[in-house]
Image 1 (spheres, helix red, strand yellow):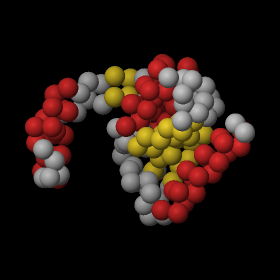
Image 2 (image 1 turned 90 degrees about the vertical axis):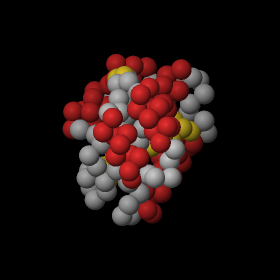
Image 3 (image 1 turned 60 degrees about the vertical axis):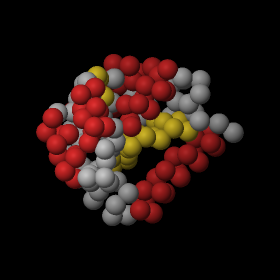
Length: 144
C-alpha cells in the first residue's frame, strides 16, 4: 500500500502507518505537521462562513472533538520510505516542525516547492504530479 495524505489527513496516515507497518510500502505526506490539531471556535466559525455548503453541525463536532496530539516521538518507528512535500509559502508548518521531521525520520525525503502555498499543486500542477510519480516509481523499483 502506497499511502498519501494531505493537510489534516497527514496525522491519520502517520497513525495508520504506525499501527500497520507491514501494510504500508511508502508514505507521502503533503504539507502538514505530525500532530492532530486542536481546532478553536474561531476556526469553526471561519470554516462555516467560508464553506457554506458544509453541514454546520459537522464542523462544530470536528471542533469540539479535536485535541492537539503530537506524533513526533513515534515517527522514528516508521521504516518505510517517506517523502514530505510542502509549500514554502504555506502557513501550515513552521521551520521547527520541518526540523522535527528531519530529526525524527533521518531517512525522510523533503521536497520544497518555493512558489507554492498550502495548495502545493499550484502554480505548477505538472511539477506536483512529477514529484509524486518519481517517488512512487523509485519505491516500486526498490521493491521489485
